[in-house]
Length: 99
Image (cartoon, rainbow, N blue to C red; front, side):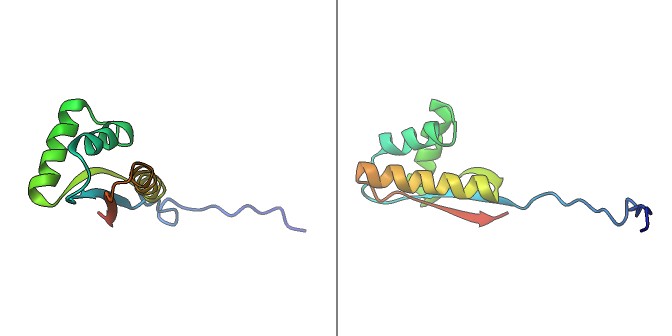
Protein backbone atom coordinates (compact mmCIF):
# COMPACT_ATOMS: atom_id res chain seq x y z
CA UNK A 1 0.00 0.00 0.00
CA UNK A 2 1.40 3.36 -1.04
CA UNK A 3 1.11 6.52 1.02
CA UNK A 4 2.29 8.85 -1.73
CA UNK A 5 0.51 12.14 -2.14
CA UNK A 6 0.02 13.62 -5.55
CA UNK A 7 1.02 17.26 -5.67
CA UNK A 8 -0.94 19.38 -8.09
CA UNK A 9 0.75 22.47 -9.42
CA UNK A 10 -1.00 25.80 -9.88
CA UNK A 11 -0.88 25.26 -13.64
CA UNK A 12 -2.71 21.96 -13.33
CA UNK A 13 -5.32 23.49 -11.05
CA UNK A 14 -6.79 26.18 -13.24
CA UNK A 15 -9.90 27.41 -11.56
CA UNK A 16 -12.44 28.87 -13.90
CA UNK A 17 -15.03 31.44 -13.02
CA UNK A 18 -18.51 30.01 -13.45
CA UNK A 19 -20.30 31.10 -16.60
CA UNK A 20 -22.67 34.00 -16.11
CA UNK A 21 -26.10 34.44 -17.63
CA UNK A 22 -28.02 37.62 -18.39
CA UNK A 23 -31.72 37.62 -17.58
CA UNK A 24 -34.00 39.69 -19.80
CA UNK A 25 -37.66 40.52 -19.30
CA UNK A 26 -39.61 40.68 -22.55
CA UNK A 27 -42.31 43.20 -23.40
CA UNK A 28 -45.87 42.07 -23.95
CA UNK A 29 -49.17 43.89 -24.41
CA UNK A 30 -50.85 42.52 -21.28
CA UNK A 31 -48.55 42.62 -18.23
CA UNK A 32 -49.16 45.84 -16.34
CA UNK A 33 -46.38 48.29 -15.62
CA UNK A 34 -47.04 47.89 -11.89
CA UNK A 35 -46.69 44.11 -12.14
CA UNK A 36 -43.37 44.38 -14.00
CA UNK A 37 -42.08 46.83 -11.38
CA UNK A 38 -43.16 44.46 -8.60
CA UNK A 39 -41.25 41.59 -10.30
CA UNK A 40 -38.14 43.75 -10.56
CA UNK A 41 -38.26 44.82 -6.90
CA UNK A 42 -39.26 41.41 -5.52
CA UNK A 43 -37.22 38.95 -7.59
CA UNK A 44 -34.34 41.10 -8.81
CA UNK A 45 -34.06 43.31 -5.68
CA UNK A 46 -34.04 46.54 -7.68
CA UNK A 47 -34.97 49.89 -6.14
CA UNK A 48 -38.29 51.49 -7.06
CA UNK A 49 -36.50 54.03 -9.28
CA UNK A 50 -34.33 51.43 -11.01
CA UNK A 51 -37.36 49.15 -11.50
CA UNK A 52 -39.32 51.97 -13.12
CA UNK A 53 -36.45 52.74 -15.51
CA UNK A 54 -35.99 49.07 -16.46
CA UNK A 55 -39.76 48.69 -16.99
CA UNK A 56 -39.78 51.71 -19.32
CA UNK A 57 -36.83 50.27 -21.25
CA UNK A 58 -38.68 46.95 -21.62
CA UNK A 59 -41.77 48.81 -22.84
CA UNK A 60 -39.84 50.97 -25.33
CA UNK A 61 -37.18 48.51 -26.53
CA UNK A 62 -38.91 45.13 -26.33
CA UNK A 63 -36.61 43.72 -23.67
CA UNK A 64 -34.17 44.79 -20.99
CA UNK A 65 -31.55 43.10 -18.87
CA UNK A 66 -32.53 42.63 -15.22
CA UNK A 67 -29.39 41.02 -13.86
CA UNK A 68 -26.41 38.75 -14.45
CA UNK A 69 -26.08 35.57 -12.40
CA UNK A 70 -24.60 32.09 -12.34
CA UNK A 71 -26.66 29.44 -14.13
CA UNK A 72 -28.39 28.11 -11.02
CA UNK A 73 -29.45 31.52 -9.75
CA UNK A 74 -30.48 32.74 -13.21
CA UNK A 75 -32.61 29.69 -13.92
CA UNK A 76 -34.28 29.99 -10.50
CA UNK A 77 -35.15 33.63 -11.15
CA UNK A 78 -36.59 32.79 -14.60
CA UNK A 79 -38.81 30.16 -12.96
CA UNK A 80 -39.87 32.64 -10.25
CA UNK A 81 -40.92 35.18 -12.90
CA UNK A 82 -42.87 32.52 -14.82
CA UNK A 83 -44.58 31.26 -11.65
CA UNK A 84 -45.60 34.70 -10.39
CA UNK A 85 -46.78 35.81 -13.83
CA UNK A 86 -48.91 32.68 -14.18
CA UNK A 87 -50.38 33.18 -10.67
CA UNK A 88 -51.38 36.74 -11.56
CA UNK A 89 -52.61 35.87 -15.06
CA UNK A 90 -49.91 37.74 -16.98
CA UNK A 91 -47.86 36.42 -19.93
CA UNK A 92 -44.61 38.12 -18.77
CA UNK A 93 -41.59 36.16 -19.91
CA UNK A 94 -38.01 36.09 -18.69
CA UNK A 95 -35.21 34.57 -20.74
CA UNK A 96 -31.57 33.93 -19.98
CA UNK A 97 -28.61 34.16 -22.32
CA UNK A 98 -25.02 33.20 -21.67
CA UNK A 99 -22.86 36.27 -21.16
